[in-house]
Length: 406
Image (cartoon, rainbow, N blue to C red; front, side, top):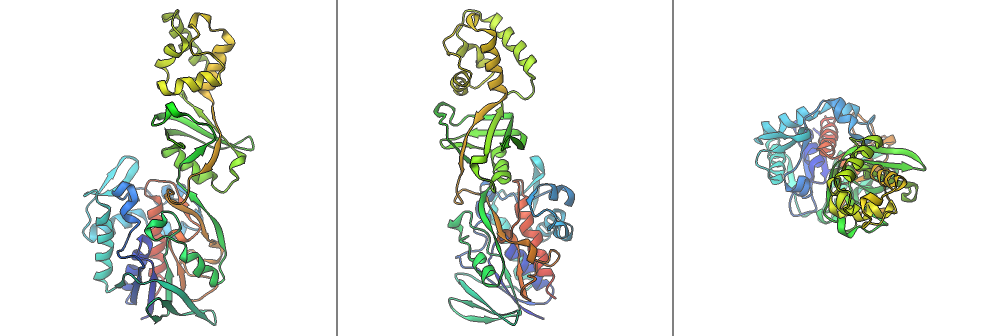
């Protein structure tokens, strides 16, 4: 039996504590907040999209950084096992659009309660309102964990402190300091799954949600991202599912290298779109162009389309020349946007970057530099798209870390 201290009572820490204790180890989980799972409470808009009901292969295809590293964890503790675990410990689940898994109650707090119930069933001790200050390492091995109240001797320490997104939940980057002090390299951290601020201002488009459009990002004139989905115009720029996914792909590049384009009519080729315009023009010969294109676009978008196409909104359609029509079509198929910056960590769903994976054993999550030191969850340089995949990373890596201590 080993003495194990888990630092952090979020998704990965709770799962790591459970897995370590079920193997007969003496496990103490230390959480600096007044309650467990503070970040879990705000995931999925308070409903907690806790995993995705998919195969390990599909799960890995949704990982943005660290896919190869996660192969062992994806098969070692899959989303199916996460679902079985939750139901075994009394949490009924449901699967919604996109295979997203939620508690039937729609209460994120029930996920935390289930993890706590599982931990207590295998004897995990939980200390709240206690802050870890440092980890003592001697001769390449973990010796103890110093907190603000005590020095605790241990054989193993599991760092499950999360990233730095949503700092109000206690994610303040403590784990990165512990890792650095142990000799680990930290890949620079950046916000991921977050909105994008634009240089342009589109006041009349604020609040408009565009569905079934294609968002394309080019980096130095080469396509870095192109996907069909939903986008929302906001007071600062753009957000919505497409934009969150895009942010995960471009957050490690200089924003000045990135240019964005919207295909507002991806189902229509330019010739088809031209035929549609001509038909509309024929039916409304004497009307102004700004009124005729309402059948194609939300009204709040029309002024910007016509401005970029250099067409006066009051021009009667019977006065629109072919070259003007061509410019309108080109703008509809490639509406340009200029990104200024990503929104900050206070809004980011996850942190991208973290403890470099090169010095972590992928099947055990143990440090290659320090015996008895383990990492799991968002503190590692691992991140994925939305849909329950990031919490599954937490559960898979947490289980692998705890389960490897025997």
